[in-house]
Length: 121
Image (cartoon, rainbow, N blue to C red; front, side, top):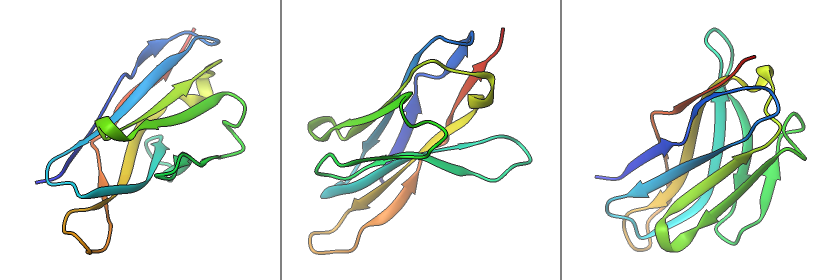
């Protein structure tokens, strides 16, 4: 009943920017931490940025200073601004949202299907 959908990926050249969105919908009581991950085929999935429900941001060293994570609680949506993209940033970007679906219940992580970001000259 709860769905998480990413969007905004695409093909860009090195140095360009993209803005990704992660929208949650369904029977949502509250959303706590939301996080962005990325994965290259054959490699481990890495966390890149995350943000609490109060707006506290965290970043992996590889993207710190280039990426900015934000959220709009009214829209149940998290964003990731990817600046100065490099070929090493090429990956499928997915989001995970800690969502409470029952009042007083525990938050559970929900995954989206991911959006492809390709950086190539």
